[in-house]
Image (cartoon, rainbow, N blue to C red; front, side, top):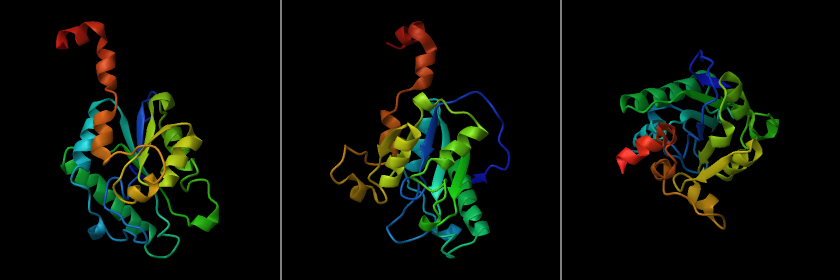
Amino acid sequence: MRAWPVNIRKGPAVPTAFLDRDGTLNRDRAGAYVTRPSQLKIYASAPAALRIISGKGYRIVVITNQSGIARGYMTMAGSGAINLKLVRELRREGAAVDAVYFCPHGPDEKCACRKPEPGLIKEAVKDRPADMARSFVVGDKQCDLLLAKRAGLKSFLVLTGQGKAAAAGRAPAYKNLLAVARALPDLRADKAGPAAKRKKT
């Protein structure tokens, strides 16, 4: 379900960064829910990470499970207010988010949009095509990694949020989203062509 913006303009397929919210962009701990805008605490390095990701030519889409709605911890309107605060605070730091999608269902509802099911990515791609070969998922939980696998995308695990628990016994992880951003290839530099690259050297 799209939380923001209300309308999306169609366009060409764009390499897209599908980013988890809680634990990747903002503080999160196991068993706790962000149920009010005042509880949303964005990581200090997140705005810089988004500026780098966008500057390298990727569209930024946030995808988040919000079972607190199904559990009665918050309303749909309350969840919307939290996501709007996320977008506004990041914008104040010069960090653009292109869209936010969320799943309001509980784990027992067997919906197609709750991560690790790829429904949120499918909805986002239906709204605006993504260059899937150059798109990826970033998150702090195993469900984010499995989501990427099911969607046929590359994944990055960050050690913020619940990432340290998810990293046990698996491939290397990144300190935070900023570390991922710095490691990404610069797609706009690739478009500059050989001549432009020679001038920089």
